[in-house]
Length: 290
Length: 274
Image (cartoon, rainbow over all chains, first blue to last red; front, side, top):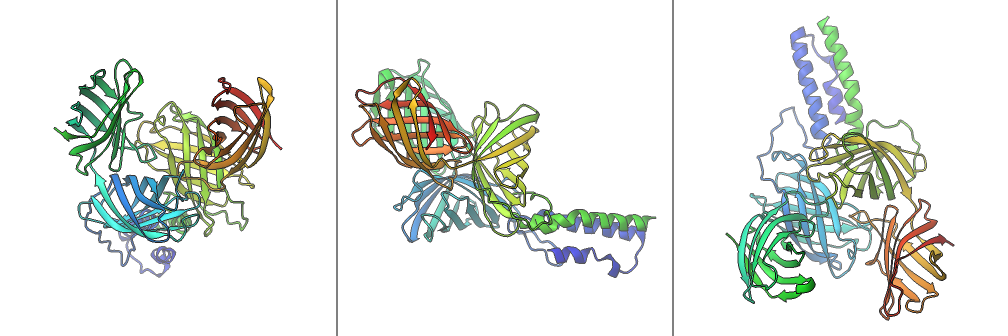
């Protein structure tokens, strides 16, 4: 890169030209040098050959909420799943771009990530090739190399960990992007309770991978809680998981836990609990987007 | 005239951009590198550790007043890839941020970290550390989102590990003496905290005499420590407090025993490293 810069600035070897041409060459040189600084200095910069830069075809952005399943192939499994946020700070969709992520780790059999479940990473997306280099987590550096599909809604690849407790472990990963859980959802639980929940997912998570939910709900059949709002501080999605805390005007709190489909068309409810004076719990159910 | 002007500008442009081409390219993708090298072969101690960063706004409403967390400097090459994860103290634009991951570089004494976008807010810290790598001073700025355009100064202090034996009596009950043997992990996690394990011995209480602190129940972030010691018979002792940069004293702001026959009031204490 330095050699290329120096050759472009070796004005002594250039034939004499007119002042306008020099001005144009100056401008071209400045542009090329700027490209070297802007593009070449990035993570995994794009090589520049004879000055002709051919951008790769545009690819879809993978920004969003992801659920990643991990399968160990070497060593004791450090994690079985990752869930959270993948983000491009300056999304261009055309060249190698910086990519960031923050995942919550579901620890595997090794327990190496127990109590240390937040995994920030930074890397690149070059075409469909995704590389995420994890920050040190108790001295463990995790790397994901994967290839995403054309729609940037799935990727497959490998992971490896160096350093710390899980050093030397490796495996495969499959990632799925989940649409925002935004809309009106209605459905019933096994006990006959009916829920209508209007929710909006925050497009930006909190730095640990969780996306906040806000909204309101109407509940029929619980006995003491009918209308409620979602407590944004304790209602969230991460990966495929969802947890909502509904708070009534009188302060009753109902917690609904479940999972949802990648297209966010339905929520499978696994448990519902009401705390406080009206304590109760309800069984499973399903809510469908209206 | 034009010719000399062009030549002059060419030279100036090259000189201006050369340091970025040479040194900026060796950064870890954190953005704009920390500027030119110092030209010195002097090496500095590793900055990896637990930091408290005081922030003072000079432009706009303060987005946060404090950042506490983990800086990890990787000793590779001359420009060290560096990451940070911080917990912000904020009642403003960063109030909803539970963790601020940052990425950048340390080159010589120069520290430059750029955060992930949190609600579109990107925090940039540029600072210079001292020879011992225990303090740094510099500036911050935020672009994008709620705190867009705010800026200020930062002063960072590295905190020693909370490792050792700490002893003291309860402020309101001198007969109760608490002795904690603690071991803080040297390396932090992805959400700013350092895990702590340990053991507690309490004299002067019948409901709780000993307890174990597992890493699942003990952590340090910046100068703040939170621990929950469990006794195998059921009682527990929760301890929260702050400690000094040398980790010689823990000022316990909340100590609560839970279990049959335990006092129900929240106690305070000062524990000193022995």
